[in-house]
Length: 496
Image 1 (spheres, rainbow, N blue to C red):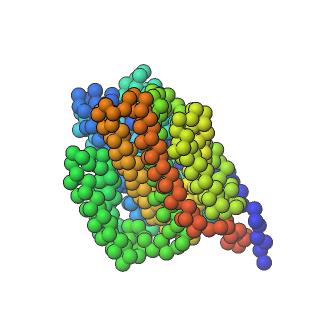
Image 2: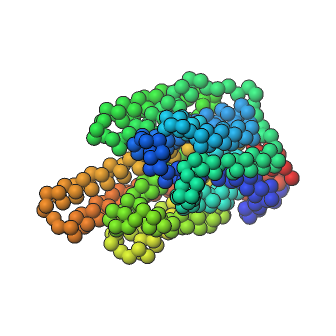
Image 3: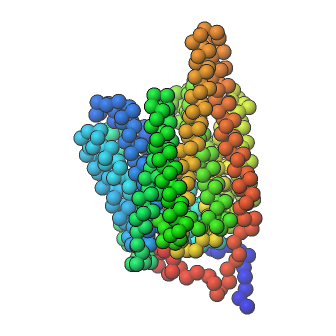
């Protein structure tokens, strides 16, 4: 009988090389999500339009990403992961060049949609390819290591964007992607072998016509709630239409089975369904505070935008350290222990802003380190659990479902936090306008408004605990020499 080792599988040279090649391709998409945000004012000035109109350069990009993600499973089944990876990079490169050549805000928005169709597939492809290549015994470390550079993007993106805008102009915000994409294409063509493909894979056209508009409508509706007071019908129509389409897709997918654009039968696996629920909640836990924290430092603590940006760095540093440590811990101790520790760390980090918002910056920075470390631990545990019981052939479609759920959760968390903060700040502003309070009380009212909103963010974190307890307690079963997967059969491998 073959011996079974309790030691986790080694991170061999081929897997590390694959991770490096994929990271080069992902770098441009990761940075692009934050670099362009700092250029909105410059874009509005360059094209003589309003900031609200220029903001569609970001909104259009995000909606295009959301539309592309559900198609990833079919694309990889039909053409193979390597071919889809190369095509995605070319499309992102084309969109970047077109954006740099834009002559009007309308043309820029259209070209950003092209760029988003490529960018939307980059990160899900990285996750799906690594999940198959690493296998269940190495997935925690693989996702932890691949996530570390990803956490540098929120830190470096705004800084790099500011430097480019001040020295070279807004067009270079997009042209900076060109050398990165070319390097990624060169590395992929030299080091990645062609992946498996299924020539008979057919597009689930009814599913695509239901799911893609549903996801776009829900995300657009959640985004449109920022203008609820002026146009209340728009978000209601979008959200209702999206929900109806989503329900229609669910009924269709349950009948279609593995032929569906996204196979909802994967939710029958307890580990995958728990990971899917956590993906929604973790999206809310991450992106809700991302909206709240810069505003807190600027409005409640009176700091500049630059100072607020620098003070957010501890969250990214905490998350990077956690990703490195949590990857090995998940593979050795199991996902539940790591995720529970992450929930308490993240909760402690948010609680600092609830009960000690007036504390020194050093105390708040310690809270941000705890928040980042906790969210990083939850994220690694979720991704490691997601593929635990999923057949390797179903990983691309599972990744599509997880990414769609995460984006909806992120939008939901952002909208809820924004609405609560707007309501609380509006009440504080009304009191000040009535002359009932002095300036010091105004600041106190603003601080209380933020503390109340942070309490809701803490509620999001607390809501993850019951779901975390559904995660597997132990790591995957060690493999014997007879059932160790052949690297050549994985979806995309590096040449020796």
